[in-house]
Amino acid sequence: MLNLYIIPIASICTVFGLALYVYAGRKHAKHIYTYIIISWLFIPIFPLVFILVNFPGSTTSGNLLNFQITGAFASYVLLWYAGVRLTLKGVRIDQLNAQIADLEEKCTYVEVINKITKGAAPQYLREINTYFYRIQKTKNKSIALITGDLANIKKIDIWVNSENTNMQMARFGETSISSIIRYLGAKKNPQTQMVIEDTIADQLRKKLDGISEVAPATVVVTDSGELKETNGVQKIFHVASVHGLPLSGYKPISRIQDCVKNCLEKTDVLKKEENITCRTILFSLMGTGTAKGNLDDIVLKLINAAITYLEQNKNTTCLSTVYFLAYTDRDLAACKKVLLESDKVEYLKR
Image: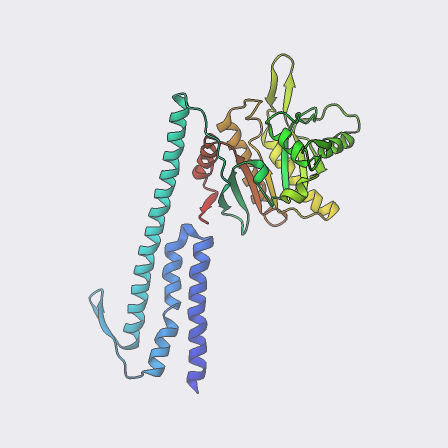
């Protein structure tokens, strides 16, 4: 009769130990060694009880710290010791592999910078690749870097259009993000692919209602036009990230990080006021194109603003992933450098 209770209790203990180990690996990397030792106090209980119940004549003996141990206690201690030792070895190997990966990424950054310093042009990244970094203080929030042609990027709910304070979208013949979004969202003649309805730009003008200039970091929301069908984009956020100066051209606004913060806030406003749930959003590296802002400085501000928002609103925001578009190897290297040096994120291999 006693066996009916012992085995279920032992099973619960082992399951608890395994759960504790998994939980520690995900949430408490800094204290992983302590959690491993504690979890292995519970993990051996079920196999030990199972052996004793079904094979009552079995015995184990051994030496530990100059003490002779025998019987069930010896079996338990040996299982615990072997489990802890092997697991800690595995953890250490994982840590060393992670350090090697970090060093390889940093070497890549240095190689790219050296090439560009010597006069080599940044290389455009044509292939779609995504790199995810989990924010450690959250359950399911992440920063992602994505490469490739914007026209081929699918299933991200919001695209952010880096715009000037006049909210004037770039002409179709240009290569800026604004021009690409304008063209991809426009309705086109199926035979000639010529624009017959300037959908996004027209809606943006209507939203402004005659206003010729907005404050820096202002966000104006429009529909995505044809991008909804072709790329799965729900909304376009036009954010005033650069401003024009007479005889000087466009320059990034002084607090470029506010563009990220305001766009993320606007996403949650859409959820609250219009019941539109968007879980993913895509930013370009605003202010680093025609505005010629310092890439490393701007990337640091943009990514840190996204991390801070997701940390501070982890229990309320509808967002799960904030994407940053890296067009070139130089862009990607700058973004990876910021994330590798941050103690707030961890790289997720997929």
